[in-house]
Length: 224
Image (cartoon, rainbow, N blue to C red; front, side, top):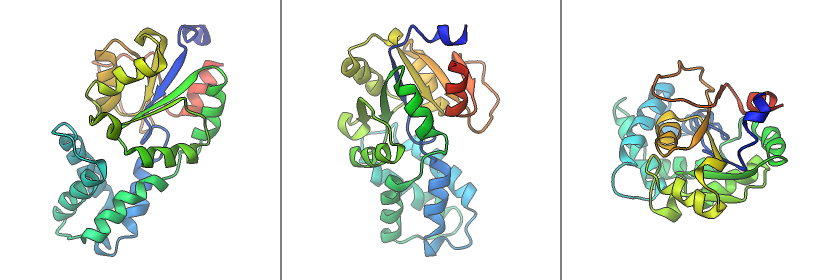
């Protein structure tokens, strides 16, 4: 019955960072290498930078490396730290090397046997292409904010996906970790979703994914 529920979909679209790529782990490893952040409380730093990031992407478009650098500077200042411009730029560049979650490559390979795959990401095009190589899967489309000059949760990524895949929204399933960047905006547009709840958060009452799982591997297993 569970597998039959998903037979109506031809394509899966994914968020990349936090869903397929280990956003927090990659951030943490990169920040730990910056000399000016020695002794910093990294988890609060990451949380603050992420909140600032979400606020900034809803303003006018700026290249994502600039946003990464500026939000890190602001988050670090809250702990009395002052990373250099060189360090800020190094952190922004490091995103392309952040590792996949351990389950992502094998799960994507299995899903590619049943569905067309695409990524909708707020990253730069070059960064996203590097991450796709690390994932080792064949994606039909990589849709970046750089190309659209727009960031999720705005609708441009979702509209672009329907055009490139040449499918109506009801034939596309969006798979993502972030409620604010992905699940809520996708559902608002009438898309069906799967929530990859890697942090085991309680499900809010305003989202209605077809499935909630703790990993991509669990999603594949439950598809059968």
